[in-house]
Image (cartoon, rainbow, N blue to C red; front, top):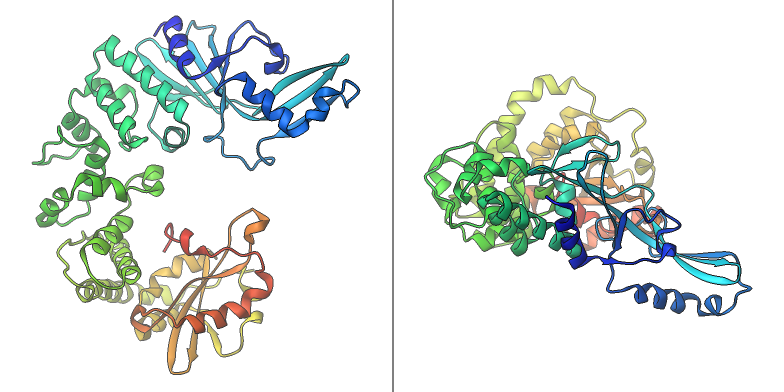
Length: 468
């Protein structure tokens, strides 16, 4: 792809500016662009922060304004400063630096304005012949994959998304890659592209159906030419874990509903069966939605652990729980002899102090046999949490209170922001037998015992889907 043509595309979304102050003294032998509605925006921003500085030449030598706290910004959401150039191999190269702040410089009584940029480029894209590739921070070349990082940029940075779509369109026209046009349409509609493939592989696909079959590598009676590519890929990958007699039910789900079920976890490492099952049965069944999601998610997770496929034909929460309980029995009977001999609590566990904070009536489940008994007695899947407990990601307590029997899972916050209570103990789940919800007053009582060190804690319930 010719340099001049790439420059035309970049200029549609990134403004070019000639002032050397913008680039912090960088050489102007290359074309530089930055992402705003105009340079005046930066000037007005600086004036709003320190108009007094701009009007007095006797001010300090320089003054820095950060758009984000140090190391607390999301690079995929930042405005970008674009360096467009031709490298030593005569390849067109696009480098993006995150704009993180402004520097007002006082030089010989003259006030100048510079952009503050990330030290390393956030992304580097190279046009190599009839292909596009990435170059990482270590200078290594990689296939241009539709990976987690690219999808974050597509979802969170509009100008990057529009620029890349135009570059793809140019490739499609120049090389007659029809599948690339389908990719562009998908990104335009959904702001991400889920199929796990590289840009180079698109050359071998001519229709949406060919693309899905190529990337999934599995035959199907379904023709995907009229499907949204993200919905098609999601359904096709999920179908690998669905009983064959139920696949027709899966492909009859409306595409817009499938798209609404795709979450960030799916963008990171592909469709997750447990999340799909939670969405599917919460949509299908009546009753306590939170309970349905929890049972469905555990049912799907345990089906994978046992090498089985899930059914889409359960018509009640009781039917789901029967499968759920069957897997628990199967898992327990299969593993209990071997597992009972293994320690459960990690050495130097992070939950040692929790024992001191809770009254004696709380029983710490500190060995595998007791964990097994807890699951049997409470009719829940707590036994399947043994590996997480051994990794010291959570710990389990039993609490008998006013004729109610509780299984309680505690975790520690992993947030590094001190305002969110990093390292504090939190209740991830607190359920009665048969996964019945806890009495709110009882939950509040347990929280009061651990609140002393959790003044700034944030409820973890929104963040536990990755591991429950």
